Image (tube, rainbow, N blue to C red; front, side, top):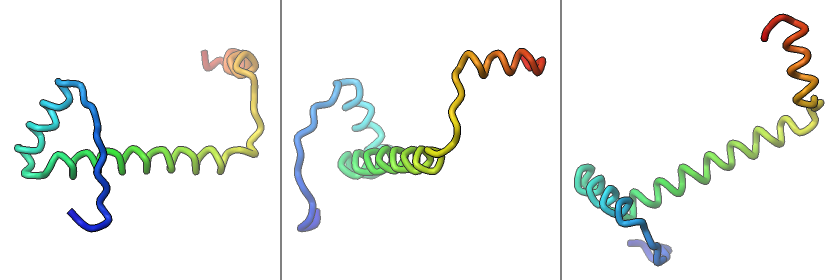
Length: 77
């Protein structure tokens, strides 16, 4: 652990804990490393989603019903 590492108590579902423990043994990685990577990946996914939302915020919107009617009119459904 580094000086900047923070300790946290996390309560896991027993089945998740078992799976994490098994993956830790299989991959020769600590449970902490696996959890940190999973959290990092999840936060990165969220950041990507937010970037896409920001990039598309000025696009015109269309009501769902109008969109379905347009698809019907164009023979796509």
